[in-house]
Image (cartoon, rainbow, N blue to C red):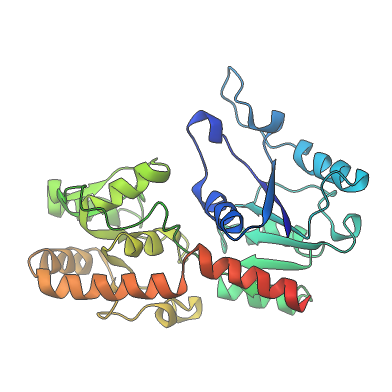
Length: 307
């Protein structure tokens, strides 16, 4: 099978976007042929200004390859967090091809993704409520929740646990993360802008991985933290998100209600290793069984069968 992937990347300049790369690598591992068409200008060549700019060069190149028979994919998969769009990205220009749009960063980017939804065969959304909105509007959509790339995120015994709790989410929750930091001091680490293996290493440096959502959304950090074998503690999301259906409080994850609840639970589990490790192990097993690149590719291939 041939797969064309559209995603933005500065991979050759040390700033890879690991999410589409993990999907790409899983396709390749299964024997499929994958060709990337960059959503950044100049095929992702970093200019002296280091300014990043979306471009239609990639989709135009894909259409040219398709029209001339140079590369005729069975699947076109666009992965973007919302800003990119082009009228050329339309199933009518690629007859016989399964055209998919991965709606990353939903629900916050739902309006941006919605414009593309009517031009593709299916939207892959990580937000259960957005899936229903697409369907209500007559668009085909499936719940394609977040996952962990286990080639990057895995328990690493060579990385020392130097923090009780670590996160890379930055300031969140209208001061919540700052309150947690003030209470826990150096035991709580919150630094941002790590990529790929560096991000995995950072998560492995804590006994626990902390998450605080911005938009009451399910995020990749939860799955990636669990894949590293860490107990994840995160804010309690509304039932409508389906988060509680994915992970059970006190069994394979820990939810907190506010800053003080988070502080109390971090302190408790930092000093109760056996309880923390049971939860961490349960979360790890659940992610391995249900939420890796393997399962997400299975979802896509099932769409190919039923198209």
